[in-house]
Image (cartoon, rainbow, N blue to C red; front, side):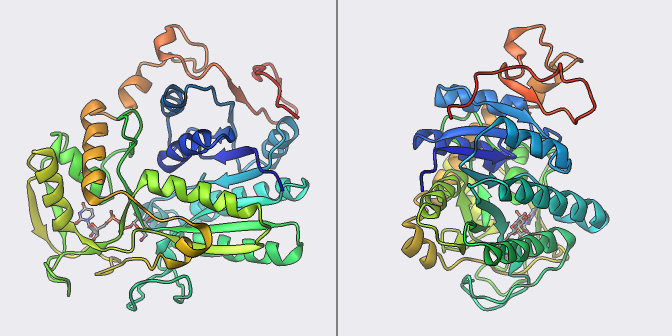
Length: 384
Ligand code: UFG
């Protein structure tokens, strides 16, 4: 089976944008689809700048069956990498229905559209959150799964839906990638993580403290049964993670059916170790205070990565030093993330006034049927 044209849903997001670059580097054609509610068109402009190639881009609401169908009518797709989805644990506890509706409906619409094609190939972005409070370490793909919030449950449900789908027809090839803790940024400093509001995750919090946007880090828990008492996680450089997707895509060519792989480094690093590495490598201070544990946190969490190494021929190569260095480069070059540029976009999006802030020229909207289609801006037709 030939896989050439890859649809990346959520391609403007943190992991999606880095994956687009690695795909382009490997000679794939990338088609990006995003709803841009939690991501910036600027990220894709930067990806195009790094790759030196345009990326056909669609604004798509994946919860709209109609829009997803239309996308697949417009583009011939050989495989799909599905990143699009809500991902904040805390928000999912407050708004579980929003998480179930968005993450599950969009997955089903996508699979329905894929099912009508010959290219039933999908890589799904899952998470180590599916291991719940497991105490047996390292976490292997065989470790029992459980979920403790709506976000984690959507990941688990989707894994199960995809398992059923794979069993239903031999044409399906499905790769589930369970990410550990993605951090870092592209070495160019042009793209990186740009969380909305105050970050929930550790690394963006550290870098926003270091750059002066936040006063100090609160270290949640210093009495865990870990070497320094703080939580231990398997931090993985986002570029390694992106390359894991390329490796999974390569494997799909062999018609594997359904497969699950951990993407981590296999090494644990504590919260304080990360803070100290950040200070040492970047020569910057990160003030912090030790506070109580955060509800729902496990003490320690790291991957067994041997399955990905054996079956995908993939392993992480970036060190903690690379992760903190690249994060800092991104943060210092973009102290306000993409926002500053985004804020200066003209009020009527996609009718640019100043080309410097041009939303992507090759952007198309998918417009629901029954509505005027003049928003669909033509771009060169797909090579069929
Ligand atoms: N932490 C702090 N202070 C902060 C933020 C985090 O001390 O301000 C600590 C946490 O308590 C934890 C560690 O840093 O010990 C890592 O926390 P993150 O929030 O960065 O990451 P989590 O491990 O909690 O969760 C991440 C993703 C989830 C995913 C999970 C998979 O956010 O979506 O990894 O293992 F499910």
